[in-house]
Image (cartoon, rainbow, N blue to C red; front, side, top):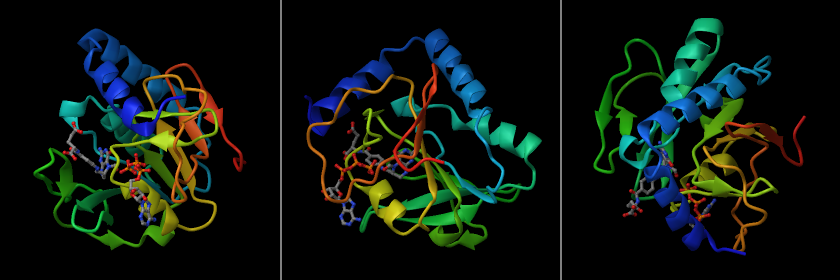
Length: 194
Ligand SMILES: Nc1nc2c(c(=O)[nH]1)N(C=O)[C@@H](CNc1ccc(C(=O)N[C@@H](CCC(=O)O)C(=O)O)cc1)CN2
Ligand SMILES: Nc1ncnc2c1ncn2[C@@H]1O[C@H](COP(=O)(O)OP(=O)(O)OP(=O)(O)O)[C@@H](O)[C@H]1O
């Protein structure tokens, strides 16, 4: 069993080793899997803007798809506060302006704020996840804090280029399981998934 620390290093490296062709193909497969999700009942969809230098999944493909085929869904993006590891949420629309923060994350700098309690589905960044739906992120706990402020039943959908490992060795009391995870090969459904 590997620790979060070991897995972070391993999967950061694996992502950086993908060729451009491999990454492009994996991103297209992720989009194709995403289109199989049931989005009925989703009014507010939270999504992350990819950090280019870390080769995160290209969520712009998903954003474009949702904007085209589900124009009624409001897409929500966040600013991160690295002082208290909280996030502030904004509706993404044609007026949203982005600015690169000092961590290389493009973030909205203005717009309509929304409370985390209205969000129905969250597309979750991760480095790797396990067969129980636990995830390893960059290790600041942003998403675990965010999840704990959301409504019960919020869908937490991980996006991963890689298949899950069996089990993450060191979980903590704050870790919140994903309800689903999308990989290029399949969609995983976890414990409380409907
Ligand atoms: N696209 C995206 N946005 C996101 C996240 C994410 O994983 N992906 N986050 C998910 O939580 C939060 C930001 N979390 C982050 C945490 C640490 C670092 C970072 O650069 N950490 C290292 C340096 C990089 C390295 O380890 O090589 C550091 O602490 O120095 C960046 C983002 C909120 N927004
Ligand atoms: N709701 C919370 N309240 C207080 N501390 C928290 C909360 N959630 C997580 N933490 C703390 O944040 C730290 C990072 O957590 P963890 O290692 O699970 O990060 P991660 O899930 O890999 O990262 P991220 O969520 O940023 O992608 C841990 O020390 C954890 O105790």
